[in-house]
Image (cartoon, rainbow, N blue to C red; front, side):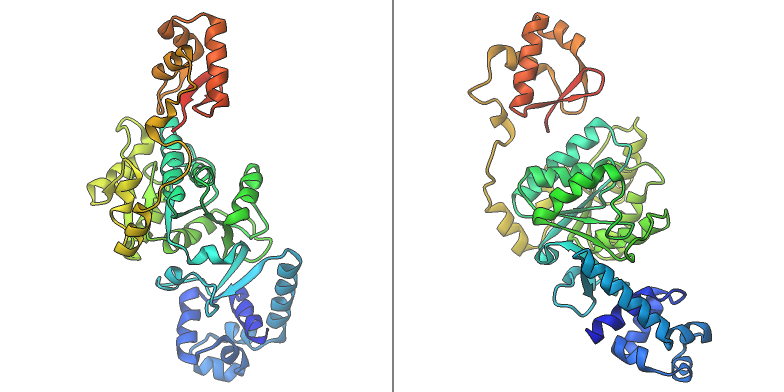
Length: 370
């Protein structure tokens, strides 16, 4: 507990950057050693006087004790850098967090993961692709990591859950502050077999500057990062750049060049990112041991063309055939194209929704499920 207390104290110390903390750890070997030094010894080690005064004060340790108590009350695990549960891939990056707050299953942190990131204001095409790719990858045993944000992040988490796989959500806020609030239910579903992570102290507000900081964790946890949609100044492009700097793979789903959200993935493809159309494109770039394992998996449930199952009636087939994954179709247009009566069309749409082959969007529009 003494060692954990020191790790927590270091993580709560303001004014000393993470890289300076790592430099101190490299020089002095342990957080206990750092906190045992006197003011003059810390200054001799290169720490500024104001920071050294905080490091050598009892108040910092009291703050650490309070943080540990809050974590215990919330059933949050504290995972310091030297803990066996600390994600091995994350430990390899230039500036890994010295402390992680964890809700959920610690063992998922050691699994092979792919990050899926993208625009908050995503198109129907982008959302469908994120769900489809995440579902296909998760159903074969890859953990899907993302940031629990609106848009592509949420779609990626949902896809992983649909594939009966595991997912990790990395927050830009305290572990107890789910943002956006509408994702609380999704967060609860992730926790059943996956995990939620944060490096920010309990209760931290989701400030804008937090998100670029957390992005290095999203990319650092994973074998590679997949960009589905991202506008020119999207935070997802920061995640892709960080993945590149961390010597991880970068994947991108090509988009319609007339869409602003296609700028990011198309730019990365031009710069050498792997173009992704199906889950196989991602698996091809995985290490040999991972690729062999994933290709051997035969996921349960319907895949691809098997959506045309034997229970689909003639009317349902006609409706399904006019729908697309990437383009919502209004009910009036479907009536014209299928030449079905209103009652026949509504009946077919209801059955297709119940069979989970299609989904309804606002404004009486429908799309195929990816």
